[in-house]
Amino acid sequence: MGVRRGIEPVRYSTASIPPAERHETWSSRGFPSIAGLFDSTPIGPFSTSAENIALDGIIVSYSHGTARQLQRTAERIASDGIDILGVGVMLEGEMRGTARSREFALRDGEILLFDLTQPVTMTMSIARSIQLAIPRALAESQLGAVAALHGVVIGRDEASLLHAHLVKLSESLQLIAAEDAPRLARTLLDLLVVAVHAATGAEDGTPPPPRGAAARAREEVRANLESPSLSVANLCRRLKVSRSTLHRLFEKEGGVQTYIRNTRLDAARQALLDPGNEERIGGIADRLGFSDAAHFSRLFRARFGQTPSQCRAQRGPGG
Figure 1 (cartoon, rainbow, N blue to C red):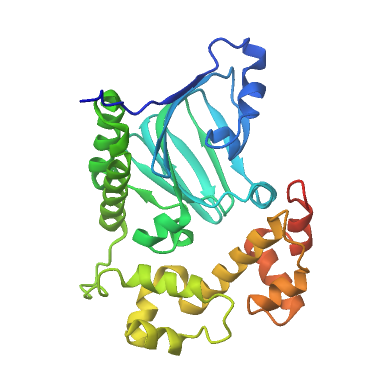
Figure 2 (spheres, helix red, strand yellow):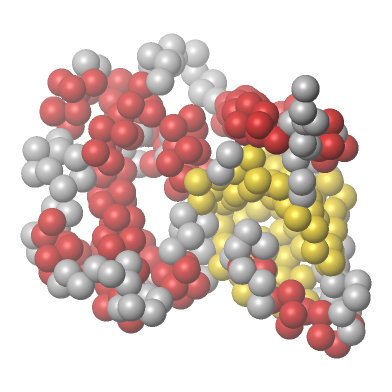
């Protein structure tokens, strides 16, 4: 019988770097380091350490660092194309910030959710924390629209199960076979769903839609983004739900039409950032259901803080 190989973390520390060079060196790191997601300004002398593990597409990062300000701007969002749900679990310390127009404060034991395709500014004290990076498609298959969760704080009580599990996971990595990583990923996602439901669940006693209906509805939208037949009536027919049930499934993101529009805009942004895509901006807009180029440009700017042309100009080599 072979030896079971434990899950190996990737570790990083600025301890061996001269103090004056630590922040600049750390800032040059790419994703999955948090440095690859935010513009950072240190508050006082800077140092940090992190331990990252990959669990079947979910990145879990345990970090300890000095005070700093982190900002994810529309320009950075457009240039890197990273499309994930971020989950910040505060172990020790405090963080305050703004996610679009939603202000938040995070303390020991609490959890912050943030959509990495939307701007966010955070100022954190010396802190120990855990960050999860979950691909949007995976997150939305269980939680619904990630955009609606941007800036949501989950209280200590509601977060306690996920908090305890993540702490124990760090202590047990060498005891867990690497081939069990997908099981751990499913468990993490399930515990996150439990925490989100506890913190944001409906309080009016209305029966929930059929299990899995939200995920199926979103899959149906994504599969038909380029179809002119994508409509409320057709979604109801394909999903076999009433209009009222369909609207409840998309209530957090402002309704069905808002979700369709924003998902189409997200797809347009991905196409504009693709170095191999030479399609005209007007062609992308028309393909995704925006027949009026000026209207498309206004909607795009409202969602991403820049015009489609500015977004395309920021794509990587090859474009």
